[in-house]
Length: 346
Image (spheres, rainbow, N blue to C red):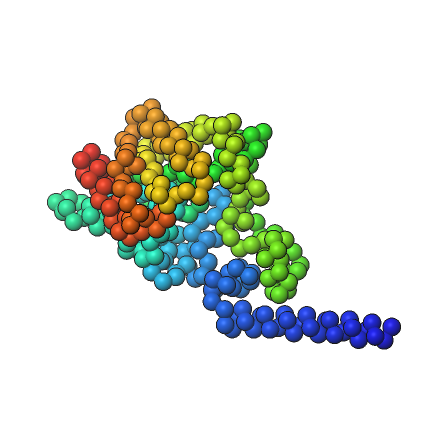
């Protein structure tokens, strides 16, 4: 009995020493990336958190976030500060989308596609000053962009709303067919902070994250239904069609016009040479690009076939789906050319 007590006490002392040592590393020496991976979100300073929960959108950009050349303004959009009320003599363009609008492949705000588009449109001169709002949020599907437009973008009084979606809505179709519904609840869930008691022991949480029995701090774990959107479900695409994507596009066009804005749909481009991870992806994106063109015609809104114009040169791409700064410059030039030619920015 005495030996057992000594053994238990020794075990407790070892665990306490490991816990204290791990905490000393996390809070004294580890960088924000490692703290974010193995610690709790509460362990990070506000400026290190890219996202925060939202009651209607699951999540939005955290206005306090700042890392290197990337920052969010007080209204929760990537880029410099802007007034919610549109200033006199300003033409506002708002771009809805996911990470390819937010531009995760570009570390500096000034080099993102929306920022470069704003500079190009203003360089032409001879008219009102143009302000381009980067309303893209990584991971957003057309469901989130529809709500984002109504709740957060229309108050900015945009004159033109550009819809730049396709790929994230592909993954929203990778769910059990019997659960695939108009409300997208088979794919998206409310922000989850489902922590267990052991997560507060940081050394145990480290093991839990590595072994998969603790909730990770990744965005997908927080707001996506477990198992949904996985490439292994690619066979569901045949049964889960793009009809909800098409419906969302129609509603986005209607809401934007109701708010007094013109609307532009664009196709979505990729670099096939760098996008070989999931074989189904290219065909599914092509299907969604066709939907974008069709719904644009049905709604009587402008359509820019960006995918047909964007070069697939790997030097312009950070990966198969996100452009780098040079690629974002080319992207901005193509958009600026189209907007001027079609008279969408006057």
